[in-house]
Length: 368
Image (cartoon, rainbow, N blue to C red; front, side, top):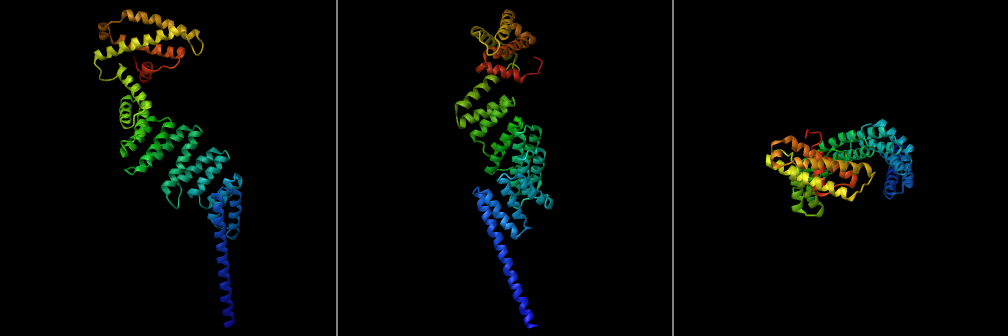
């Protein structure tokens, strides 16, 4: 009995030493694999992880890193095989879903790419889950925008914005800025402006955010708000670009006869001023006789408008315009037609002519 007990004790000790040695080899090869992967030695990293896996064939962590080494080495089919097996075991694992999204993207399966990115966003993460989910959603947004899937991108960016923390830490302002730029790329300047305004609540004097907020308000057609942001940006950090934008938006606001709240006298003054600017643009364009496309049609349009301008000029006077709002609309339609025709014939407008073009765009669809 004593000998038998001694035999079992020796056997148990040897077994523990063997398993400890195995665990040590698993860890040793695993660390080598991580070091080689970090150094860009993907083929060597794969061999390291495979050696580690030979001592622990059921270790999911080693399998995951081996798959990531294959992915980094461009061996997508092999990587996918390992990752799909891991996904079958833990379909809610965030990192597995993210790696499968990367594999699917490289293999050209766009629908699966979207599916796995969403799995990563909703999945579980061992550390910093909010950070990892945001990164996964950012990647999905970039993927959707790159493939012109704009409606899906807008929905994901909205989700990103909804999950962004509120409050005063400075890093939250940077996150809001990131959201805003994505909204702008997705064709949603109004939503982009909301994000930049949230960022400015955190740092009201950040000059680049002020300038960007002004630009987004400008693109959304809210020129009054744009003027306010450009003015603040100019006070904080003047630049030629900001001052040029500020001048343009002030020209729009100072010459739009359709702005709410104007007196009849001010409306008429603006109409007359815009009419004179249109005539100057028309005659200057006719004088150059240039056209960037086919000269015949644009110049013919300008000549026709020139005759129409003479007729309008003969019928215009201050008293008549005051009493006849329909005449004001007729004059402004003529101005807009001149700017359109001159842009086709003589190139894009600048200065006051650009302001008139943007005034037209602002009121498109209205009954002038």
